[in-house]
Length: 282
Image (cartoon, rainbow, N blue to C red; front, side):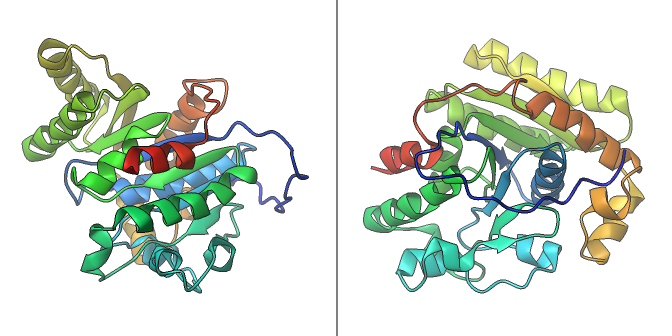
């Protein structure tokens, strides 16, 4: 697998149609590698020829900018407060991905008012004019803002590990979305698996209980093996698909891209994601 091509951003002409698809990356608990998955997935989706935006939607404990070693000029909290417009905080990464930083260390951001949520949603609609795919890195857990972001996405990717506590919390996320009658594609990605068999067994365990107790189908997004290169890349504050493009974890993300790229599992929607999000907030 080669490094993704770095493309120059070109804003489409006014009125140009774009069917933007959204992928919400979620986890029932923290520490399962969700943000790292969202970052590396975004980079390879961009390298596959898609215009991609990555939004750190953690409203209080965001950390993607640290992982990216990105020089940000503002974050979501400034947009919510009305002190900056979205275009002032968007960062064009060298990988070709547009990045919107989340808020960090601001507990009040986890509980936005209806007016603030509406303002944020309306601002974020600008991303849909210039992107084919938007990857939302949601906060860990099943808080209201997480469920609202996830409920509006075309695909929800629930990241878990084979650990029993992580599986239990992943099921909690799936159950919460089921109760909200989520209609998109619900998938499970097993991270830090020892091997293919463990990754498959983790998915099958969740798929079976979801079928039996929730009467819903969840899809297998695959697995990412335990890979020391991932930890090394994090310490270097680099995406592992760029630092180690041939490592097992990078190959696993490349396989996931094939499942999620346009023409794959994504379902076309006429209504934009962030407009759906605003409606769900109401």
